[in-house]
Image 1 (cartoon, one colour):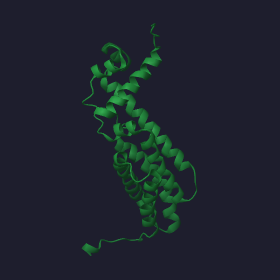
Image 2 (cartoon, rainbow, N blue to C red):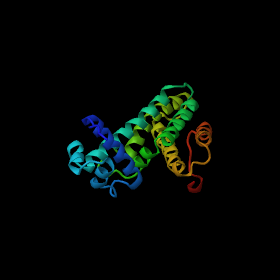
Image 3 (cartoon, rainbow, N blue to C red):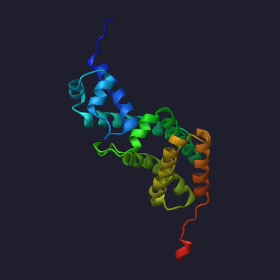
Length: 204
C-alpha cells in the first residue's frame, strides 16, 4: 500500500488534532512530545520542526479554542434586543461550545502553564464579561442603577455561567436548554428585583 505524503499544512493540522486530544485527556504536564509523535506516526523532530516543542503546539491549541468560544459568544450577543434574550443567547452559546467542543473546553479550564497573557481561561472570561458589561450598562442606565457597577455584575454573571458549564461538562444532566433556562431564571430574576443600594443585613 502506497502512503500518501502529507503537505506541511496537512501535517500541522494533524499534529494539532492529535495534541488537542492528548491535552484534553491527560493535561499539559502529563503529555509528552514522544506521545504526540507516536500517535501522529511521525518522529519527534517533525513535531519540533512545526511547533518548536510541546509549549508551542499547546499555545496554538489554546489560542484556537479561545477564538472559537469567543466568536460564538460575540455572535450570540449580536442578536436579540432585550437584555434577557441576550443573556439567554450567551448562556446557550457557552453550553453549545461545551457540548460541541468538550475536549477544547477541558483544555481551556485547566491551568495554562505556557499560554500568553491572552491565553488563559480567566482572561477569556474577562473578555466575555466586557461584552456583557456593555449590555448591562445600557440596562442599568434605563433602570436608574449606577452604571459603574455593570462591570461587577458582568463578572458575577459570566462566572456563574462558566462554573456551571464546568460542572455540566461532566454531569450532562439536566439537558442543555434546561440548564440555560435555570441559569437565566436565577440571573434575570435576580437582576429584575435588584435593590438600588443593597446592604448586608448581618452587618447593619
